[in-house]
Length: 193
Image (spheres, rainbow, N blue to C red):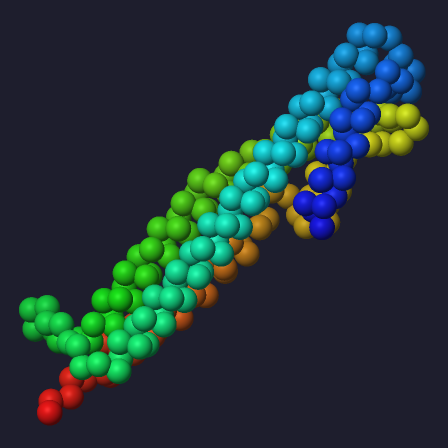
């Protein structure tokens, strides 16, 4: 819904920006129209940046989950075979190593997502809030045109409120994978023919 709303916003934004009748109520001087065009361009860039980071993050998350599921599947299939590895005094099935590598990949993606890409998205969202605050009391052609970011924030919470969902998104598969790996490590013993 957000993307379609922002798509609508961006399409109409250009029409409003290029309109010669652009003006805030009681602001019809050429200087004020120029300021309005700059504000709209700034807002448009902030929304496009949010959309870019959202798309990039969603692609990264879906790819990470797909790869992790493939790794878990490979580990499950490898359990059909009697492939054991020895490390000092421990002997364990090869699937433990497969799952361990998958968990390492999942943790790496989670760290990059949470501490890098999500922070950039939050920065873009905060920029939109600043623009919303700048023009919140002004009307454009009789309606308050900007303010979408603030409305979304009011509906879902401030930037960073999503961090618990991001943590949960990664924590669930990591915990399940860890439990699966430990169960195999502890209980799956080598069958000697």
